[in-house]
Length: 467
Image 1 (tube, rainbow, N blue to C red):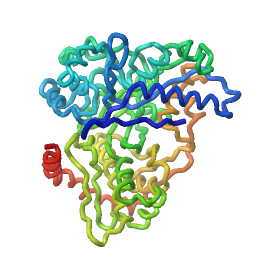
Image 2: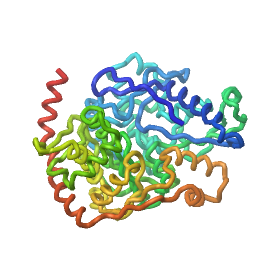
Image 3: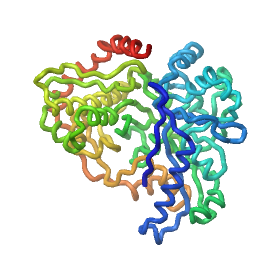
Image 4: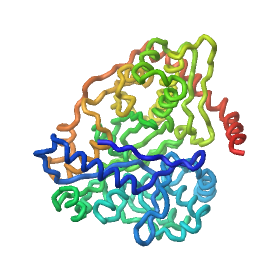
């Protein structure tokens, strides 16, 4: 069940949503699900939640949202990032200081909306707010908290030092583990929905951590590639003392005593959406992939850099912008389509190369999201990544991970591994073609130079358009 949500963009670089819309959409989806004929003989015993990471919800003393939520892909906080770097350096609690992270958004509120800042009692991330509305219990769990620049992953506690430095220690919500039971759905709400009054609610996790669990990616060296609006390469790593840098992120998994390292491409599927909306609007996505398939490795000498919204890994640059390089009158729309698909995959491959350089043996990857729905793209990923790519038989992403947390909390199975073995299986595997990988590697070496050759130009262009 899905429900469309409005994106509020008051100006360039600003991305917001209304927290109440998330709750309303959740309730609407639950109602529709419960009225589905397939649910007639199914009893709901528990639930858990997942949601977008980093996005900031600030609450007043009545626990009401003070303003719209500032989302993960909002880039207004460059000045606040620089302030944090001046105090604590380029990395805080093993994570790069980037515009997407929650602490930067809090500091933006402090600088630009003092009337709102004065009202802040606490803050939450999106799924924590929905859970609060369902249960009346206000918590933040470890996987999402680790993406705020405020959680000490070693202790799984808020960092008193970081919080004190930026005067947010009085705003920190109580922490729980991702699999913890946190309460029941409020009786009046349960009655209204037609649910029992003892539906157990478990804390849940951020979308990437739950997406990993829902794909069976829970143990060291297991790796996930998720291509949605953004793209993620995520690899489990319980050795959180490894120093990754290069704008790779180190967050807590929803699995006890497990973490993961992650690289992010900000405009992955979003680049393909842009291509279809603005250039190939007469084609369906299936037709776009067919056109791309008719082109050749390297798109007949055309490269695309998917920096439409800036870039996270490895550049950490909110001012870089995308580009086609090598475009000529001979290039077809199939070449352009393939260049965009290859460019997205090259960007994700940069994260894989960084992880391998740190000693991670990435030979097998589970693919989820839009990038896992087309076999041509899955084979292209295998060829570029030089790794076996597995396609799930049932791909529900973060929803599956949240469901597994609820199942585990209800003690229906002996352990998490038993649940994973029961719920998750592969439909098909794609193996790398060594010759094509060698061809792609030649283009990738040129692709890596695009950033250094264009970042000053695009920053200057951006400065002109912002005047």
